[in-house]
Image (cartoon, rainbow, N blue to C red; front, side, top):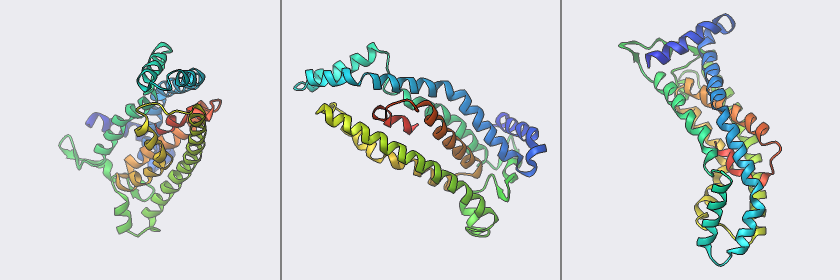
Length: 253
């Protein structure tokens, strides 16, 4: 933990000439960008996997027609097709999973009152008037929604809402195309009921970030807002030439 605190402190010192009192907040944004750059190869691999699955759609449709009366054979045939084409259905989850350690490091760093037996000085660093170790509840009790601290959170909420709306529209379009493809095939894959139920709530998942920002320390909220915004832009670029019908699950990472 102390090593990570030193890393954040060093980045803040580097950015201090530009951001002054908000240098530590800027360091967290920079740290998040570095994490996303490290994860970017996984995101590109995930996009390639999604595009590969999209190209398999005609073959899967043929398998559905061939094994229409035998769901077990259909499922086995589709799995064999994925294996032969080296396509993993779970590849889209990897970028999100690899980011979790960085988020939890920030969460614990700015939730701990001491580091290495000494007081955690990072808790007093601020983004404008809001302490990085504080939460929205603290801002509400010190000036209210439109107080100096509350306005910082309103700004973050506005960014999250804009990104979530963008993701919502994109995911709805992808789901509509996927539903049309499924309907045209005339049969749902066996064992996909739970996945179908999950995709119904997927368009709203981006808005759950609002609750995360409201309840975690501000430093961790900055990580979430930066990473979520990065994800939205990254997906728009990586999936720009991909048919909507195969990309619905790609928006969950």
